Length: 295
Image (tube, rainbow, N blue to C red; front, side, top):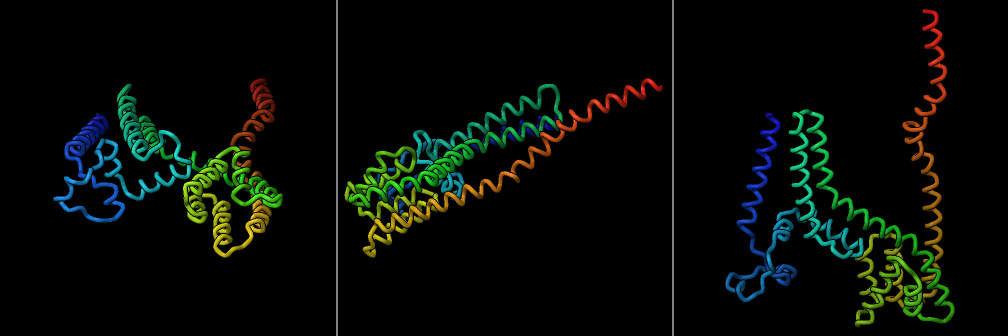
């Protein structure tokens, strides 16, 4: 019962804090003023449109800035999937945590309070709190891995197209249209940026900002430098394609070397006990029968 009283008091404190937080919302500056780093005067606040304050924006404003920046970075690396925003992720974290606390409390109270139940409830609450972070981080990681794996083949296609007489932009457009996956989407985004009047340098720097793949960043820097110094992009593509193929081969060899280490854990804790049971069980049963007959 003391644990139940503590949990009830904690839930009451959380509910009271949320009520106070919603009762006294903080004033939100306009996006332009925040971007410029300018403090808006009190008499000018009425003339400047203020961003609509909602429950989600209040939770985002109360969260640590570094954590919000990390979520925004993961969303950017994941390709900004539909429905995944910073506000929704933070709101879902709060909702899932509250639901986990409620169901965890019901689980602990039902049938009597036990230390094992309390530990399970705490683990469930922690898992519920980190589920949105794990999902968006996994999606961003998978997308960046797909970009890294598709880069050598795409560079080979671009190299062949350039050597056949196409320009760099036309070769990139052809590879993007014929390709599938996140890398083709990013190349199409670069072409769209250049079609609206942005320079090649700015478009590729935006691509570097949207990705976390070291190989793609290296390719972007090579293209930017070649464009700045007037180097033939065909030579750059040829060198980069050879280097990316070599890196992909090295990564495959590295993963192959790690297999023996990764298989050691399931071999020791999963396969060997079963093998010992199968091998030793008849002998143990025979020994038991022999001693029982002697007795």
